[in-house]
Image 1 (cartoon, helix red, strand yellow):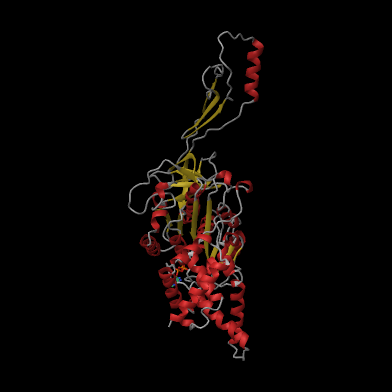
Image 2 (cartoon, helix red, strand yellow; image 1 turned 180 degrees about the horizontal axis):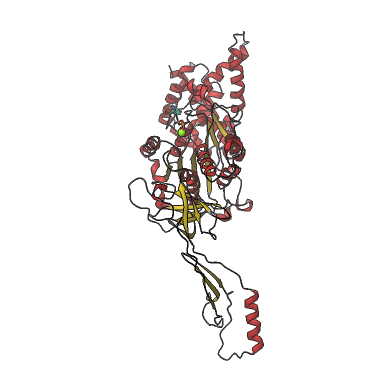
Length: 559
Ligand SMILES: Nc1ncnc2c1ncn2[C@@H]1O[C@H](COP(=O)(O)OP(=O)(O)OP(=O)(O)O)[C@@H](O)[C@H]1O
Ligand SMILES: [Mg+2]
């Protein structure tokens, strides 16, 4: 602890500037008080209320008028405290610091330490301030200076961040030079209110058949991707980002607590498919300090929000929120916040809700932009009723549940159709998809039950057997490889074929080959029909008739 030398010296200034000026109103100090407590110095100052009174040379004042003006000034005097403080680090370690002497710091304010290390005021306590260190805390020592900055944590936003790989503070990690921009946005911004929003009604196509048909996602929606480790959670989000090519949707992939090699692989995939042109990757890897992992999703959200408020469409992937929650638990426990269920602090729900509430479809008055969120949560042993999964399920507008046994059986994406839902996206589906996939979710869920029943070896009647057979084929049909997003019209025609019995004769193992060959046939020999479907986006009698003819023709040649 450094010796603190308190030498109070009080200097007061009191002056009232003339408010009668012809120019624009100026800020006029009315009262300022300096308190010097060395080595801390605090200035408390007030500014007078601004008045604009037209200047007139011929104007005559009498004492009453002047007195009334002064009286008004005093009445309207607002105390604004302008504080720049310097404190001292009392203790530092594990990514946090306790600081003495920053009595006027704001919650969430950036604090500057020596060696250009930044911190964030996290706990405001009676005698000290707990700060989380955003950077290398090993560079700090007991007794170091800590200065308030008067600024909340902000990150660079705008076109300059697109195509870049950044850390949660907006520093480049891709070696492509600094981010050149003047536009910054606070990492923690309030979510838009009810009047600022409108219902979700545009589709955000993922290009994944199972999702677009059964749990469609709309622009502005929050759809949780949940499942055990290694069940293809990230793969779904990456495919979705790749599918946003040429749609104008800006994508933000936030990697929290993942291995750097995994993230490098993801960036490489995105680059390979040309998706890095419109994507920003925000990385707080497994080796980053917990505070950085905690703020990474907010930083990604702020970058996406900037485009949303500029009338554009954005997609943010938070991969994953369980690791963010763990990081938050770590800093909260270090800060001695009382632990609750599963040792998470009491405000862990708020931590996720305030992030996800920022996704929205804005009203037309605000430009109609949108921010769609795909948060990912990892479960342990399929336990969806654990604390973090239930929290995030209740915050989001639906969830896609990935199941390990389906994954290992080769059903990829390993989506459990029965408990996956999308509560708002249905209104965003195109009419043709609604027509073909209307009852598919329930049919598939019924098929799974029937399948389990059939395993008992009971004799089945012909109708049940036929239902099972079709189920097996549709089940094959919703399998999809990695990085192969499909156009929505292609999805519509193959699902139409599946649900209307055009693949009943195809062996289940050949369904995906059938799909591939049929689509190349359709695109090659019947491009006009495809174009018409894409223009009308609705299956009328004429188009259904034509499509059925093409399907029959193709089936004759398929071997
Ligand atoms: N549709 C798919 N087709 C084929 N392979 C897939 C598919 N989806 C995922 N995989 C493979 O499964 C593995 C795990 O996928 P992924 O990394 O997306 O899972 P995850 O749930 O995000 O894992 P983690 O828990 O490590 O984050 C990867 O090797 C990926 O290539
Ligand atoms: Mg993953």
